[in-house]
Amino acid sequence: MKKFIALAVICSAIIIAANFSACNNSSEPKAAVGKDSLKTVLERGEYLANNVAACMDCHSKRDLEKYSGPVIPGTEGGGGMVFDQKFGLPGVLHGKNITPDNETGIGTWTDDELLRAITQGISKNGDTLFPLMPYPNFNRMAKEDLLSIIAYIRTLKPIRNKVPPRQLMMPIAAAYPGPALQPSIDGNVRPPESDKVKYGEYLVTMADCGTCHTPYTEQGMDMTRMFAGGYPFDAGTYKVISSNITPDTATGIGRWDEAQFLNKFIPFREEKNYNFKPGKDNTIMPLSLLAGMKDDDLKAIYAYMRTVKPISNKVEKYPK
Image (cartoon, rainbow, N blue to C red; front, side):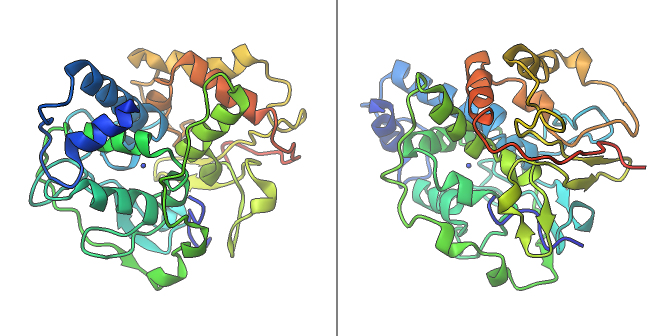
């Protein structure tokens, strides 16, 4: 069994967002916050939380019998998704409740506490989070984007759902990637969208593409074969192997043009294309969420993926 899924693993508007909720638990904006500016912050946070960082992927319940496991309506942010040995984990974990419920969610958390959890993997009570939560990646995000996500999740419908505690077969200290984390995110900068490659890399990091699309060894992610695919997922009703998304022309996406890449996502903006039961020919990739990315952002991701090292690794998507 593999050791665990992730060891590499959530402007003036920044100031507005910080003033909006920093160091208090209220989702009400302060008087100085302009409605248009607040709207921009919340829209950015909603977009990132749902379609790029895909927080709702792990922190909601998904119907894994339907294509790509779409989020079950009404469970957004309420937690409860189970991750266990079938996913290569050393035990059983559940997606946390990130709705603003005061008793079972993040209703009493301050923004600083949320930032620490998202970027350092330390919860409100000082507990270390298992790096299935890709906080090493979020640790590289621009603070303005992180604050936008926080502002948005505070607007979610509160769901009372007490998530069971994790049950690990290893000490959490062995999984904590402390040296890989920056002590401060204040210096992080979001690349300009005009720089497609750099902005694409930023989006790929935020979306945590590498964790699923990289082979693993007993020691964890094989960093020498990033994006080469080959990680197995067992969703119970089906098994699927992650694809090679390096620009290798024989086994990866090296022969794809930009339009072909976008076409792997865009069809799933329509519910009819995922609201069915495909049986064993399914995928764990949350396409119904990721398809909501803007065309320009998908193009930036494509531009960046064309620059990564090509790796020959033929993947059988649906193992016998």
